[in-house]
Length: 189
Image 1 (cartoon, helix red, strand yellow):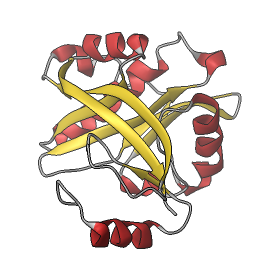
Image 2 (tube, one colour):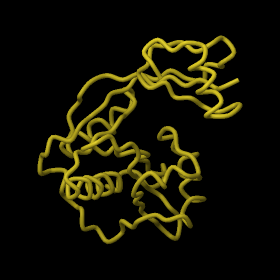
Image 3 (cartoon, helix red, strand yellow):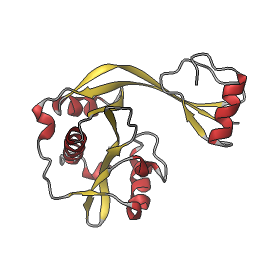
Image 4 (cartoon, one colour):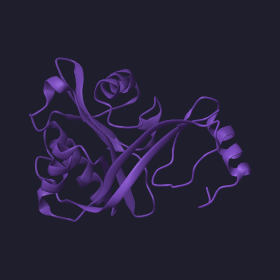
């Protein structure tokens, strides 16, 4: 969309998304028409990987597995319980998603989403409450960083400003803040 979208652009976006769908206006100040229902506003930040060696630790962990189509029900359940941000039934098709299982249940995952030239976004980093504190997120993010860097790309990610534990983890893994972002969600008419 343009910086100042007109009525036609809003109509095109609504048609593209479909009725009663979520539009995430990521760091866009444009205000949609009044029949678009506001859903959320969340302050966050974008972090980029600096190339620090800390991000390559624990990559060879045997419990990290690639998630396929058969894992989607478990992925959706984990997302519903942890709310890492937008994740839909076909989101895993955007890139590699990795997970950790305990007793046959998916308890942690992270994956790739947006891929602007030369970059890959790490997304949907989440761990079930009962499995936190075991290093799953660090292993998953580290494994993704290694894959992304091996392709000659640079990892980046987004996090809610209030998620101070995740921010501290990402900084330990070699990420640094690039700048603030605002997540704004609206439901289409």
